[in-house]
View 1 (cartoon, rainbow, N blue to C red):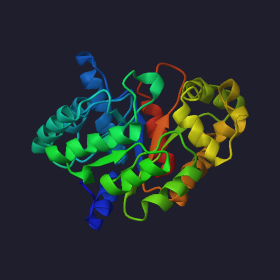
View 2: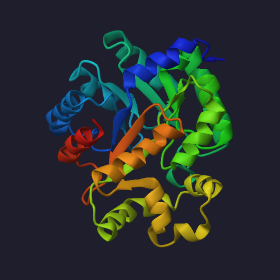
View 3: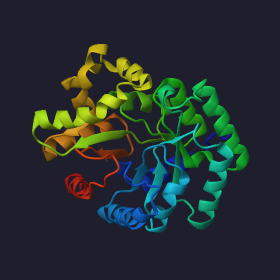
Length: 296
């Protein structure tokens, strides 16, 4: 069943990805003309000391390849790849091809997406189990995949059938719950969003520009209701309380405090998504440099 039995494997993965990574939709593209721009950005992130990059937007393994080839040690992960968009056999074949040429550099992040985003959505837990079974049969190691788990059952699956979990859009309280379920060894790598702006009104307005989309996806709102929020917190792009729980914004100390809360709650690695005004596929390289400096 592909259960993870080597306790040292989890620790080795934690050391490889380090304490901080960058989550970005901009680091993946279907446009060959952007190849140089993306690989240059990935190489700089490695130089800045980030241990991993997480490719958003249901990226596939093909999006990771040029970034891995342009760097020497950076882990490139899908954050996440939808199991409805990519067949398990295709995923396994691409994983094995990449592993032959660049062993140990890719981490397969998998998720079940959302009913509103795919017409294939059905019995998500069983579908994930079936997908993992197919990966096992094809020889993809359980220790080289993580699941975008929010609820207890999927977190247990992350513990038993993967190297750990990569939760998205959750507060530090979820991280504490996830750690209790996962136990000490599996990787716990939550994502959190960062707005590098000290003005409260402006920072929260920028945050709501992103958050409003996610508040229309019940998988997130149902989970957030378990951590002290109410339906009222989801109105008008999110209450101040919700925005402040899900976004790091403000001066350097405030941002460090927010990110540190995830580590104190049990995270091994925090994937930082910079949120700015502008298109979601931009590369906020100046902001990444500032983040590297303030977290150093």
